[in-house]
Each structure stands twice: as C-alpha cells, then as structure tokens.
Image (cartoon, rainbow, N blue to C red; front, side, top):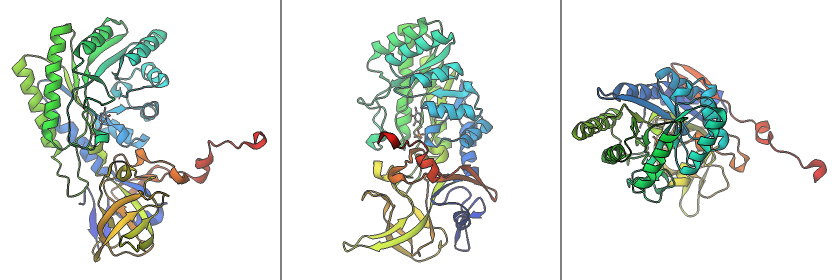
Length: 435
Ligand SMILES: *Cc1c(COP(=O)(O)O)cnc(C)c1O
C-alpha cells in the first residue's frame, strides 16, 4: 500500500516528487528514506484530534521508534513533547533544543548518568519504574538540590493480541508495578509525596505495541482510572496526570487493519471523560505517547538488488545489499512487510523471497512475496520501516549503518550520515605492544 506523497509516475515510484531511482543513484544504499510531509501530517493529526474540554492533553512522541536530531526538531516544530528511554535519547533530545519540560524519561533500569542529566536539565517528568530507582532519584535530587516531577509506571495487567516480545502489561512483564500489588503502589506514592524535592504527578501505563483492538486501550484506560480512584481514597494524594502510553497499530501488510488516529484518540477521550463524570473524579491532564504510528508508514528502506538465486529446494531468492543489520524486526518477531521494485512499478510479478547479506539463514526480510521481475542493479524498497528500523539497526557482520534522508517537496535532506569504514573501527584499540 502506498502512503503519504508516494506516487507512480511512468513506472517509477516517487516520494515527495523525487523518484527512488534518483535517490538511490545519489546516495549510498541501503538508505532509510522518510516522507517528511507524512511524518508532519501524523504529528498534526494527533495534536489536533487529541483534545478535551474536561482536561489538558499532551502528545509525546515515543522517540525510541526513530530518534535523531531532526526528528526532535520536527516534534519541537509541531508542539509534541518527547519520551526518551535512555541517556542517549535524552542527550539527543536536549541537543536538538527540545524544551526540557517537554521530555519524559522512561525505562526499567535507568542509569545514574541518565537520571542525573534528567534532574540537572530539569526535564518534565521521570516515569518511575521501581523502588530502587526511587532511592537513586532521592540521592541525586538531594545532591543537586533540585526537584523533579515523578509519575509512577503501573502495570494494569492487560493482555493484548500482539507478539509476546511487544506485550508490556501482562503479569510477568518487566515494566512497572502491578496494580494487583496495590499496597506497594500506595506506599511508593506516599514515599514520593513525603519527599520535599519530589512532586508526584500521576500514573503511567503502556500496554504494548502494534495493537489494533481499540477496546484494549479502553480497558487500560478504565483500569487506570479506577485505580486512580483507589489511590485518591487510600492516600488522599492528588493524581493530576494520567499517561496511557502508545502502541497504536499501523498497516504493514493486508493482514493489518488499523483504526484511524481520529477514531482511536476520540474513543479514548470519550471513554476517559465518561469515566471521570460517572465517578466524580478529576484529572488535570491526559497524555499519550505514540511512536510507531507517527513514523512507521513514513519511512522505507531503499536497497539495491545484487543477486538472485533459485534454490534446488524451490525457494527463489532476491538478494539485497542490507538485511537484518538494518531491519531486525522480521527475524526478531516475524514482522511482515510489503516491497516494490521502484523502477518497475508496472512490470509482471513473480514470487521471490527477499533476503539480506548477513551470515544468518534467518536474514530474510520478506518471505515468498509477489515482486516485479527485476534485474541486478534495480532498486527495491521495503515499505513502512520507519519505526524500529534505524533505531534497532546494528553493525552485525561489521556492516556499516545506512544513512537517513527526509524527502520533502522535491528536496532530499540528509539527516543522518551513513557510517563510514573509519567510523566502524573508531572505538577499536589495537593490542599493539600488548599483544
Ligand atoms: C515503546 C513505548 C511507546 C511507543 O510505542 P509505539 O508502539 O511505538 O507507539 C510509548 N510509551 C512507552 C513507555 C514505550 O515504551
């Protein structure tokens, strides 16, 4: 399926009025190519449609989906806050001049360096995962004599239909504190509230990723709201903010039938408003954290076809000059994708398996797909790799990481340079005399 500014012009696939063949010839492949207009459209949709008359709303971009200076610049431009999950993401967001108060810091084992930078720079909120982290935060705030807002990550125990690796709120998940351990939650909140330098803001949950069932989000919202009610009555401490995380599913293949952003966020708002009214409780703000649904469909991976192989066993391969090093998702959780040969958009199709160049039999990007009959040297795009593509890429086999470009209105803007061979050995140290 073609998203955003994609068009087919004389057999050629274009994005932002530039043909992929042209981009492929100008830049080193593989290359991640983003449709800047589509990223911005997704951002604007969330900002415009996630609104309520009863409480404030905030949209945070979950930057682990795809993080770089230019991405944070786009968030800043469109008024999204950002959520970060590591020292590195926090550092990058700050370097892109993201307003610190708009940064939320997540993670189940945040480093002392990360927590220190967060508190020093006075970010908007640390989302607390466990009691050990609370001890660290207490020490750092005292040492720096600086306060910080805290939200508590809860695990509302919602089973969602997605891959096990991206479920985050079942009873065995490593994230947050279970709402079933309610006494533990109350005592943590009371402890935060007692600390002079800590301000308890509210509670957070994130039930998983690539979720389609709208009722999973409603269930999470109801569970969290009824738990807020319990917190109110047990502790008398105000819960001003509810953060429901991200996880909104997107289209990868015909098997996926995502709801529109509008319908997802309006359902959420309606459900939360209704619960608040029916139960006579109040919150000041509701927060969501979409990641995948902002960048997923806007990005593609552009490869060059290097060889073909028809095996004795009957599987017919097309080899591209990348693979699991730039897209681990098929190997990690059997993720499925669609692809196209960008200079043969109207050619006859054949069945091929798109495999990478890594030394693993599992290095397959797409199994048995219909793809144009192609020639060596043609360019192929795998669609919708904008989320968790670059951000999960590695140097496996010492393959250099691809670059990233944003395409917009005929312009191709480089936002991350491809790694060079020098980059690869930059941190290596020869044993030399110690050999
Ligand atoms: C990963 C994550 C998100 C975003 O998930 P998507 O599926 O990319 O929307 C949001 N919040 C938290 C805490 C996360 O860990």
